[in-house]
Length: 520
Image 1: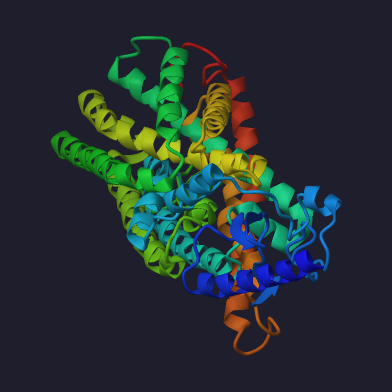
Image 2: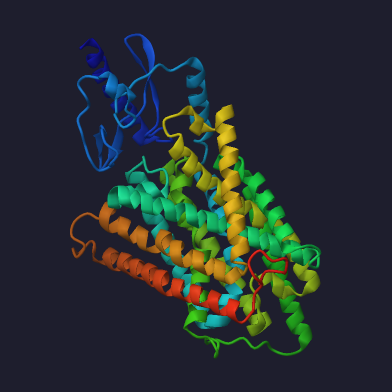
């Protein structure tokens, strides 16, 4: 009973720590907490978590269930990883490693968060915008670019509000558990990892296209794909997003300069041609349902930053500042994407290519691709890092290994990133055409992460009162719109992408999978 009384005191101390964490919470939620019981250094392996404004002693895995703390701690409970209040001896080395790990993964402020979001968001999406404008026309392209961008800012705000209300949500899959229990957790886990691996594959494909362009098809495209995958692997090895933020400035400068050179070069080429381009305010005459939906999904792909937001915010020392980050990122994205799509399309016309850098002419496209190499690989690598952090943290959730500051941590981390990059490379070789790869990714996954999942979060986790009450009616309509857009993109976009892939293979427009010829 003396031990039980000491444990109750331990829980009371944990509650006080939670109050302090509400003022400045970091990455400690849901992780091991060193405490002292009866003169011994022990670990409270699963400290209480805040849920819906209260403190919860979770004796089960479901995050929406509340249970009382155990009055006694049996030997069976000590060995059960699901039982809150379990204790074990904490060595001095483990304490030092845990403290170092906590400090290492709690260094992001809102400015660094903005940079990390820019690294993750502003990359391949911008390179597909001119081709989307060519299919949809200048009017529809501009409306969709601005409109979907504003909706993405709103849904990102919803994601941030969920993170603030439920601090223990470390990745998107944890929000799935709050909405749909274990099924939601596992479903969104699979979608989360697949989308990030698709992004790694997209950047592998783009890197291969860049190297082929720079070398005038000087080697087999598979070789350049392998080189791209190795570069992505090496850049994904640093496990903390704070390190990525340092490279973010290079990344942002890279894409801005590359796009700027392409816009200027295409503008000069158009003026030298002495005639106006064949751009149109309206959709292309030969554009059918499939072409239109692929163009729409490429725009959706450009606004995919919400998928990593939970993961990034989990490293913030002042998470409530996230609103500044998403507004800066959202406005910058809308400006860059709309100007890139409209200007390059107006200069080049219906013949604009995807990625857009290919439209600048032989010499200028080489220069543009050379300058774009940092953004291709830095932005691509962060997706592998996020996927790796989720999987690694899930495997080693109750171990100091999760901090990746031990030999076992580093070996397991490197092996995991290698596997993820290898799968991304296989995807890039299996779907060797840029627009359709982006379209499949957008339709299957980004439709949910950016649109219908945040709408569900508002209805299920954030809404107070009836959805049809006066104060909720506008938000109900807005979130309903986001949900409908997400479902339409999911169904229509997936159908269009698969149909286009089958058609292009049938007519021989693209090379086969794992072929040495250049990707489309």
